[in-house]
Image (cartoon, rainbow, N blue to C red; front, side, top):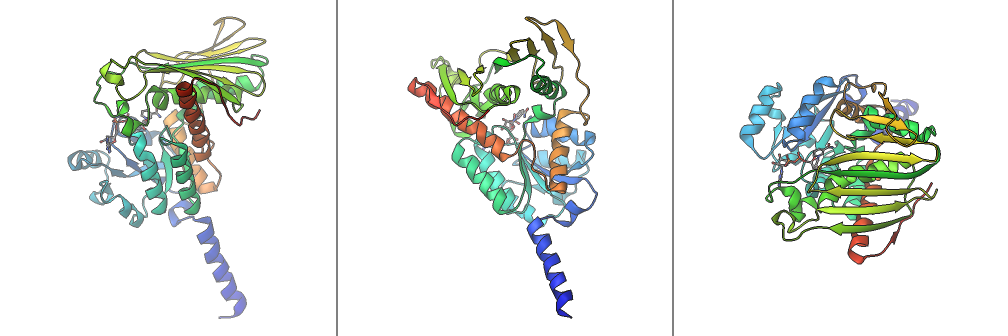
Amino acid sequence: MDIARRDLIISAAALTLTSGACAAERSDRPLGYAIVGLGSYGLGVIIPQFKNCTHSRLAAIVSGDPAKAKRVAAEHGLPASAIYSYANFDSIRDNPDIDIVYVCLPNALHAEYTIHAAKAGKHVMCEKPMAVSVAECEAMIAACKTANRKLMIGYRCHFEPFNVEAMRLARAGAAGKIRYVRSEHGFTQGDPSKWRLKRALSGGGSLMDMGIYSLQAARYMTGEEPIAVTARESTDRRDPRFAEVEDMIDWTLEFPSGAIAGCQSMYSANQNHILLMGDKGRIELEPATRYEGNQMWTGKDGREQQVTPPPGPAKTQFAGQLDHLAQCVRSGREPIVSGEEGLRDMRIVEAIYRSAREGRTIGLGGTA
Ligand code: NAD
């Protein structure tokens, strides 16, 4: 072989290795997702959404319940070779049909399965909250970077037409100069034995679960990063549901422009709301971040004009989210809600808990 031809072959091989693209990623076929955790979200919400996707398909399932896995595989036409348990999860490495792993497990397991998936050469979609600490988020980002794999957080509201339109209106100055954002998210928890109420699996209470929506809303409605947070917790510790985690927590974020966000999450009341107030008017969503049925209004000082946003490019927010990561894998772009975005939230979450614990304002490194 002449030297020029050999060099060409070597550099082509090096390019393939550095781009990290496998054959499936370069072809036009929809990318294959392995869903880890067949619980209410993974099985009940995400798996049925593949029928609405253009660039994504269900390729495998990971479950600790062999009978359930067999039933789900049969329902979705998956072969036995597409069923994995938590014990043999790492062998997904040998399945080229799996391009992306979607982690739909209790929060404290997100880091472990994300890191293992990246080491197995797979891209990762990880549910919110990204993990249970800043240190875990950083380890997840590092593992995906080392493996040259994409990492996206399941922040579906960035693909939900009402929220996308609210962000557009806020940025376009529809409410004028943004002065204040309010957001509260909560639902009434029932069974005290649920993993969401066990600190070892949840990492915290309502803040880790529903509070993430309020925090995200404060950041995506203002388009700014906070410079300080002051928080206060209110939990009835005699209530058996709240022996380990907080019920209600409210926090105030200060932004560089002078805007303020008053946020709240709770496990003892139902609430789902975002309100932005500016010097010229307001944008309000209620319910704001549900799977469907969200509503939005604009007005001067009330709900004057109901707004119906143009439909998003995808059939549903879930399909939009799944296809976005598939397209990022194909094109090499970073997801709009990357691991870094999850990490930003987790830094603020840790500061919220610290502020509530220490009873003082905590400074953050915010930017306008
Ligand atoms: P779930 O309890 O319904 O399901 C959890 C799954 O994890 C179950 O299949 C369970 O068997 C499995 N699992 C594996 N190891 C486990 C362990 N050690 N303990 C408990 N369960 C274990 O929970 P869910 O509501 O599906 O939530 C899963 C994740 O999805 C959470 O991180 C949650 O925050 C997130 N979520 C996101 C949304 C959203 O709208 N983006 C909605 C719901 C849940």
